Amino acid sequence: MVTVKDRQGPVEKSDLDFDTGYQNPYNLLRCVMAKKDKASETIKNWPKLINVKDYADWKKKFVACVQSEDSRMWSCMIDAYITPTYEVDGRIRVTSYERMQESEKQMFDAEKKVLTAIKMSLPFGIKHSFNRYGTSRELWEALEKCYQISSRPDTCDQASLLSLQL
Image (cartoon, rainbow, N blue to C red; front, side):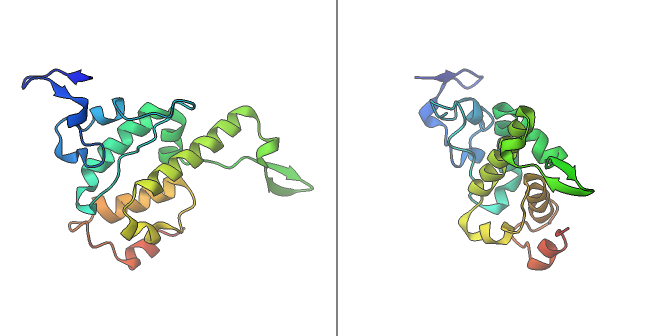
């Protein structure tokens, strides 16, 4: 049994709600106690955005999990992943995974992990609205624009999504 001590007494790990921890005062501890895959040591159960009205709380948990998982993932979300390229006969080509250097492969993998984590965290009812975003930064910015800035977070219309397209 894992316990956390505070002013009100111990809290058992089983008392923490891993899917809707926004109601729990220990929501940031969720990442510390999140289940990890034994083989890869990566988080298996990312925070889920159950209701878009709870976006601000989900965002705090998700950011904490990403930062604790891998700093490269956080970098991809905030600074944007830049696809490695090379020049052949004056034309720019995208570097294939096999030709990437090890550090480029690590960044590529981090981008794919964080993009997948964000998409898997979204409620089924809104996933289709965000299919067009191909990078974690684009998707993160679209979520921010839709749900954090809006005074009514449940009213993200297609016009505001289309205005985010680059």
